[in-house]
Length: 114
Ligand code: SF4
Image (tube, rainbow, N blue to C red; front, side, top):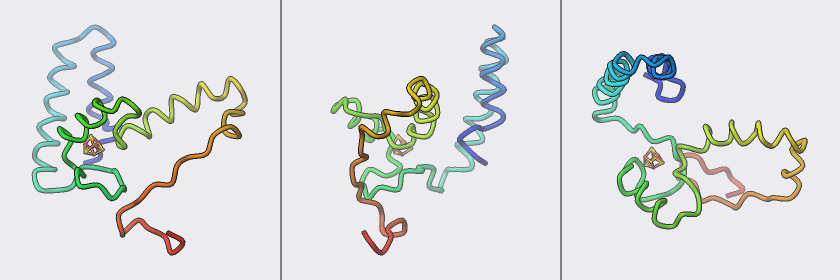
């Protein structure tokens, strides 16, 4: 089961946008039920950072809400996709004004230069 771009959840959102709230909620609960089952004992967190809160969404989200600097790592792909569309408005010239910070990744994602 894939979480990002999950077909059932995408269908649920279409139903919400059509005004079919009951159908949207039904599909959403089906997605949640599948997620609960599939990830009962499996890692669902895509974050690669060396972090003691890995997979602990409750505390991870609380930390990000508390410091207010940025969102949990799992939200990056979605937000970057939307930011990319905005960045097109300035021909991505923002890219030459910023440098991403160095991140400390878990061992399995580190390269030799790390
Ligand atoms: S909220 Fe935090 S712990 Fe949960 S999936 Fe996202 S990055 Fe991982």
